[in-house]
Image (cartoon, rainbow, N blue to C red; front, side):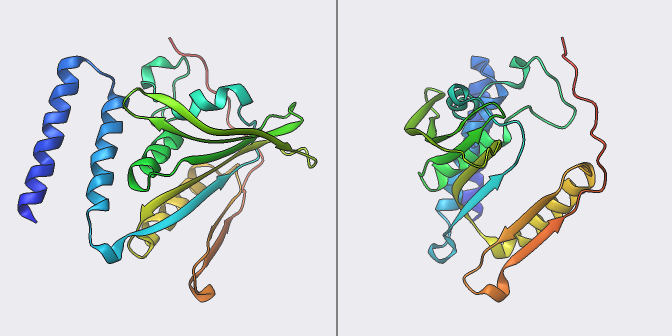
Amino acid sequence: MQKRLAREAKELEKLEKTFSQKGDSTALFETKKKELEAKRAAAGPKGAKVFYKVTVKDNGMGMPDKDIPDLLGRVLSGTKYGIQQTRGKFGLGAKMALIWSKMSTGLPIEVRSATKKQTYIAYYKLDIDIHKNEPHVHIHKQESNSEKWHGAELSVTILGNWQYYRAKVLRYMRQIAVITPYAQFRFYYKAEDDKNSVDVTFVRRTDKMPPPPKAGF
């Protein structure tokens, strides 16, 4: 165990040194780091390998059809964006989930999205070529949108351990509810045995939205 941890630490140190010498972006370094972590998880005990399908759906502004591959299938450095935020990197969360899915299960991500003016739902099945940093689109089609829904829905299949991370996930959801009182969201986990399923709704506590971010320099 100690030998394996020492080897992994040495690989990570070598990786960081290589990226530093080449002047590559932090985002790409994080991508490679996720790859090492995924390999480590996949090498765990055979009985601990469980695949989970995670789906996130909102009713926001959605993503333009033609922009979806680049928005989700290409990792950019945070300094590339003209908008600055105080809560972490801009737009890296879904990409990191996609990369984790690819490295832990090898399966692509599924995306459905529609803007308010869009008469259809754009569907993509894609992943990211982490060596070329380019999107790889498997399927692209248009679906009916008779209900005039707008927003985004992303589904990834990942390797995980729900029993270990259950409390951490629920704690994270409660923390998100605190910092986004203007949003209402639901978390649902479907277990094989219904008595172990989890269904929690975090109710909106205000209708006042925060001011939009301003362009940075």
